Image (tube, rainbow, N blue to C red; front, top):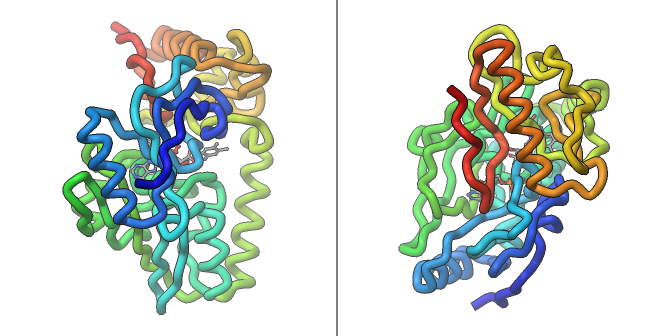
Length: 294
Ligand SMILES: Cc1cc2nc3c(=O)[nH]c(=O)nc-3n(C[C@H](O)[C@H](O)[C@H](O)COP(=O)(O)OP(=O)(O)OC[C@H]3O[C@@H](n4cnc5c(N)ncnc54)[C@H](O)[C@@H]3O)c2cc1C
């Protein structure tokens, strides 16, 4: 089997730069490698945690007692055929977008703001500027210890920042349906979206993207947190971003305990002020669920 690495810190595999060691880490390069790794996990009774760019992931300071998978090689490659873009689930959105632009295919521009991979995009049904994975995804090759099979976008049950992918299943490849668009137009749209992001979000800080999902109703999570006076609020090395209150920055050697304590406090304040229970967007690895609010 592909080499097993032990004790690699999740801090190195996540954009927030927080998290203790992974019990085991494997970097499958083909679907066969991936199935083999999933069989190994099943035999050893290990939980499986696929990690893309770790851009929506908060891992425990105590690490993750399971098998972490990082998809590389073929499972991170991108090819274009007609209006279809096929990507390994480990391919970064930046690379997919680049390839789409060079091929004169539009539709992925919104993903310029999402620093993740194709697989993470499916699992989270990631989205921005009114579009999400559900708008472009045709199908995904989903892998378990029993093998791999294609699921359509409908079968994946993509809704707001959610998919119904079963626990322990790993997306190996995706197929997007795009539409012809001149590369210069794509470039201009991307430049405009990136500039908008830079104005409103802490894109040059270590964060894990949105902390909470936007609740139904007029006020977004960020606005509520801001109105509660939480911008700049700190616990240890973690800080609610002064630029956008729905982001937590790793301001100074933050721990996951610091980040969780900030989330607990932020949620409590919003509940007290607005009666709204914010639901987390960030995925927890090796961490207990946030306490119930009544
Ligand atoms: C600055 C910044 C801005 C962001 N802006 C946005 C935004 O506008 N919109 C948005 O939706 N998100 C945003 N995010 C969050 C994040 O980029 C997205 O959720 C992204 O899709 C996560 O992809 P990833 O590959 O990094 O997944 P990870 O963070 O590595 O993992 C997230 C989840 O996906 C699972 N996963 C990863 N790969 C696979 C796979 N191959 N198969 C099955 N499950 C998998 C993981 O196990 C985990 O449960 C932002 C993050 C940052 C840091």
